[in-house]
Amino acid sequence: MPRFLHLADVHLGYDRYDSPERTEDFAHALMDALEKYAIAPRVDFVLIAGDLFEHKNVLPATLDQAQACLERLKQANIPVLAIEGNHDNHPYGTKASWLNYLADWDWLILLEPNENAAPGEPIFDPWTPETRRGGYIDLKCGVRVVGSYWYGSSAPQAIQVLAAGLRHLPPAPGPTVMMFHHGLEGQIARYSGALRYDDLLPLKEAGVDYLALGHIHKNYSYGNWIFNPGSVEANSIAESQEQNPRGVYLVEINNQGITAELKRDYTQRPILRLNLDAKKQWIKPQLEQEALALMESAIQAGKTQAAIVELRISGQVGFNRLDLDVRGLRDRLHRLSGALIFLLKYDAVGTEYDSTVSLGDEPPSRLEIEQQVFVDLLAANVNYNDRSESLAKGLIDLKERILSGRSEQDLYGFVQELLNNTKPSKAVGIADKGDVQLFRTALTPTPLPEGERG
Image (cartoon, rainbow, N blue to C red; front, side):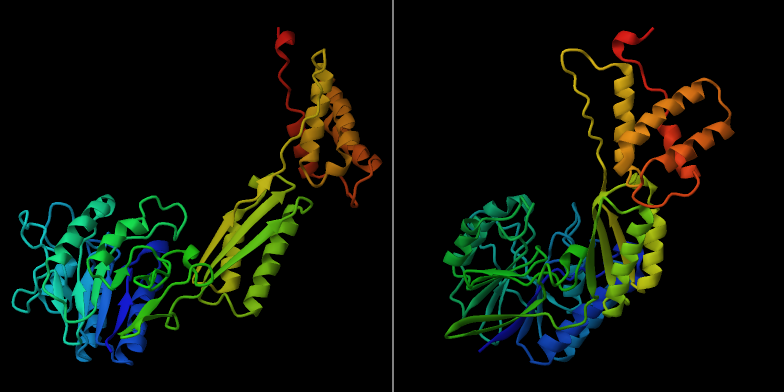
């Protein structure tokens, strides 16, 4: 009963977030997965179905990580079979990649069809240890493994050629496994390049018993012959295990069929996604306090230390959304949380103005327009929305005082009297700079209607 480990999308050398520790995570995840699910159970072979590397041009440290992991498998006499993915395939205009280098030095077996085969010639040559080249290999455990390239948008046409090539192979010693780096339609949203099941079906009809996919970072299987484990480590916040299950497949093939177990219990960086739904009645300090309280709760639950944490603030705020110091709040929460990486997504919207001036048969007067503009401006601010009508009338009077040249002391006194004589939802002290600034904004001269311009 042959057993093997199927993994894909390792992405060694991942370098987003400008974090050396995060780059190391991908090597740690690969090594631990191999130790637990390849070396410990002593599988017959390991498949890497594309994207061993994040980039086509590999840094020396990343190459060292790959060799360290592959060395452990070599010491355990477990062969590694691989194909190129879209991230690590040979650069345009060249014939070699870093996977070719690893194959030349016997770190792994790279399976590639003969893309230079003339019409009618076989596209799958047997892999040999002398050339370290070939499109398929028959292993001692009785499994045939077949390789492919990254085909991109031409994949449906390439599948027809691959299926024809499979039919011309000599009889397999047992089940046939094929590696193919592409996605199946319907598994993730907003992915227009995925293949339909009918596109892949010719491979099954040509004798493929287990189609080992990669490319999509989410685990899925279909028809008990198409299998995709997902990425070994999360490449983004959206790939947290709770929202996007992924891992490696430990597979056994016997007379009863295929058993593929998704394994996820290996070293991975924890990810925490939090959402704060802002309320319109919150003032800015209250929003900040709610964010801090949410983070304190996550900290007490032990979920933030050395994790990747994202806080998304959504909903509606009752103040100018640009008044929130997003960077300062993010830095404060990052320090508090002890997270390796902290992301703050500020998606809350401000209060929309809701003008109710009726056009009727006659256009509104300038006074009516100004009155409604003041009401809208005040209603959009949580500090004044419950008394916007009365304050708007006061602003009309304040405007006349400004135009008549009244002193600043007199204007401040009038604002204070205006605030005291209305009925706020909370106590108000003396008029502060925030009140005056808001009123100054409100009193910016309003353009005359078209018919009243001089």
